[in-house]
Length: 166
View 1 (cartoon, rainbow, N blue to C red):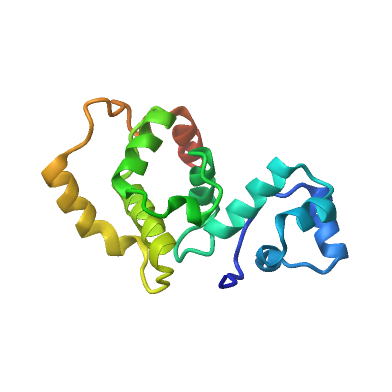
View 2 (view 1 turned 30 degrees about the vertical axis):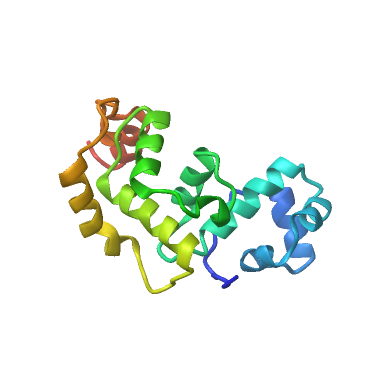
């Protein structure tokens, strides 16, 4: 798997200290088997599964920690699990589970990740899927069950964007 140097992970201070002690960079975590990481970090299988997934998802071009966390939120823990998925259906599933509709570019991200899982094509970024999404949604629309509230109407979004504004 291609190594990416700017991987970010929500590690505890203890986990960070262990990695530093063993001179292991975050970009190299995917070089270890999950059972090796369990022993090394003295962590549960579930914790290592999450850390590994977050690192693996960030190997996709233009995918950062936040979107990697969104994939884990949906219950995915490897790129292999995303093969043969559908970016539009993943978006619909995400919106149902989160309770609000998302910025359309999030669907472009889902489409990118599915494409990458199937092709390992590192030349594409999320914006390469914008036209495909627009055409699909123009023809198919959104499900009737789509949440009515937008992401920017959520309390967490409002609080995050309130900083600095008076």
